[in-house]
Every structure is written in structure tokens, then in C-alpha cells.
Image 1 (cartoon, helix red, strand yellow):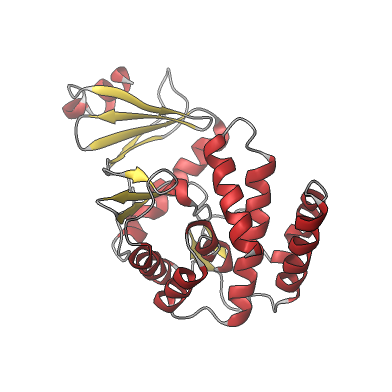
Image 2: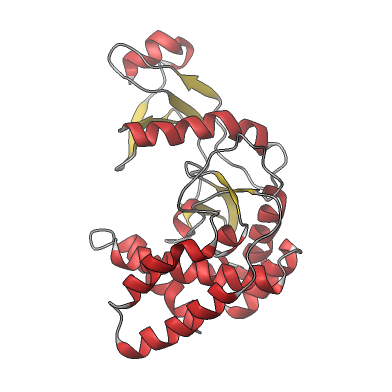
Length: 275
């Protein structure tokens, strides 16, 4: 990394570097006090970083919470094959580890954030084959994962899924979506939601996908506060959002054997959906 900085951003090359996260997709390092460097570790992740580089600077200016729009872009080099980013460092802890001190305020903040984000997206917006799509397209995977539940939970979850799947489909224009909005991608500082991070799955489509976060963090009363702040989720969209919350909770539960953080999100979301 130091060599990449020397070659492409020499004015930053003297800042201290400290590994912050070494994930499946990205190596993330602190760069001084105010910056992070995100280096993709595989081609798929590089494509997601490219989406952030292209679109986040354009979206950030109209969003009411900070987002990690790149402040510098790194280019492929002889020793490193992909584009990479330098982004702002936001203090705070992820909401999965540090719940907001005032969840009603947090619900309203996220509702307002999604209201601002969910504007019509251009035709060239990124396409995600798994998010923002019609809920019916998730049916096969949901029904398969339901077979792994105990009978009582399975019956209750199936009723919820069938109600969500029967809701009218989204018939508006494709809207900008975060695409992966869960408590590990929301920062909390001083008890308040302070930033939304990790836009690699940025896409467009049905806003119900993002609204599923309401079941990942909040009680029924707090979800109502999020819906009021969002202001435009009709009953069909809210029903689909509950279906998305169920579908995503099952993904987290069945693919997080080695990730207790995501499994915990899955368990909480599943119980909130069944509430």
C-alpha cells in the first residue's frame, strides 16, 4: 500500500497506516487520523468499489447522513490489478455492536436518509441480481431455507412470506438503493446514527429492499417512526419490506456459521419479523 501511495498520492504517503479490517472482499486501513484506504481483494469486490467511485460522489451531496464517497481514487498498477479508494474515516461503532441511545430518533434518521436516497435512478445505475428485484424472485431460496427451521417457526414464517409475496409488486421507477442496509453498515456515535457505510451493493429497484432495515434494528413502535419519517411507504411496500426482512434474516442465519455478528443480526431480524 505504501508503494501505491508513493506512486499515486505522494502527498499522503507519509501518513501512518494501520490495518482496520481484513475482510473477504476488502483490506481496509486507517490512513492518518481522517482517512481510510479500501483495497479490493478480488475481482468481484473491485467491481463494487468501482460502483462506489462512480456514484457516491454524486449521491452524497443530497443525503442527510455522511457516506463514504471517495476523496481520492487509486488506479491499477504493476503490482496491484484493481482500482482502489481513499475515503473519509467516520468515528463510531457499527449499530450491530452499539445500539443507538434513542432508537426512535435513530429510526427517524434512517427513514429520512432513505427518503432522500430513494430517488429515481438513471438507466446506467448498477444492477444487482439479488437486491431491488421483485420479491417473488426470492421465493425459491426462501422456501428452501424455511425447511431448516423448527416446525412452529416454519409455519409462522411461511404465513408471513405468503402475505408479503401476495402484496402488489413495485410499479414505480427503479429507485436508488443502498442494497445492503443492515446494522453492520450503520455507524453510531454519541448514541446517534452518524453515518451509513459500505455501498458496494448500490443498485436500483424496489425500495422495500432497503426498508427491511426497520425489522433489523427496531421494535414495532420504532418501525412506525421510521415509516413516518420515510413518508411514502404504502401498505404494499411495507408488506414487501417485511418479506425482504424475512428473506435476508434467513440468509444471515444460514450463511453465518463463522460470523457471529451476522448471525446475531439474522436472529434478531427473524424474531422481529415474527413479532
